[in-house]
Length: 313
Image 1: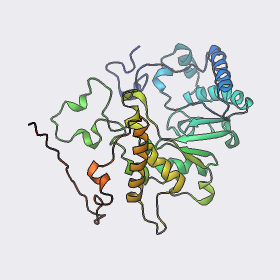
Image 2: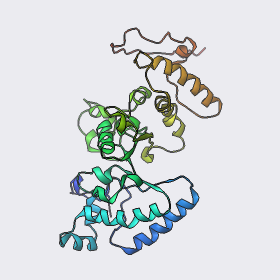
Image 3: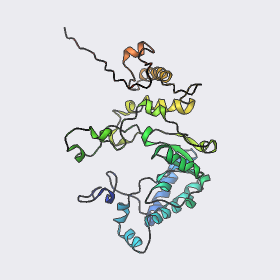
Image 4: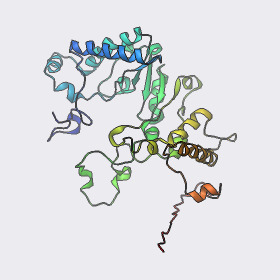
């Protein structure tokens, strides 16, 4: 079955991308298979956490199943289906001495979500990826611990266009360049400065900040494979590491981009020497002349082009 059938609206899709499919909460075999998978994973990895997913439930997929259609016709809801799934898996994971990590959708999705009573905060961590600091605030103010992976700042795959082969948004004359995002749902590209700038505890009280466990960058694989892995991750992930470990401001409270740039240059040099193909952050001339590519006009948008001529003798 095609993931987005012809003559249907996006809201009626069967998946957000191929391949199509979701586990059926009404099928007893679902839980037999899952318990085997969960048990095997827990045996392999000793960490005290188990990520159980829970994001992007697509209503159209469940609604296409005859058994679920019957359930819904008897006044059942998709949220009740998800609650059945969680209630059949969450206690088992906890019984294996694991804290369960879910994507934020499990509680914050507008259409399909569980009642918070199904997810006691002492056994649950929520990973946020939408709406920046707003969703982080919603999570921790409800007493849950949070892992921050905001797509607006921490998604390393953004800004490379879309994967759809016949994307109709490119049919009109090229006047706007894809609406500013280059055809990528989470564009534009997340520069190291964008990543470094993000404060994952923004707008939180001191008590709420203690519930933020940390952050995680994400590189989804629709348009990434081993040939681009290093350059997509490094050194942008290093920028996140510095700001989470050491903060992104100096003693006066100013963002320390220039200092960070120098450290990232040094770190990239070490990675390249180890065979890691981390991307450069400045022209080589700037690296050889520290500070000479900085600007004394922090509020001015500058566009500078560096050109190299190839002369064949």
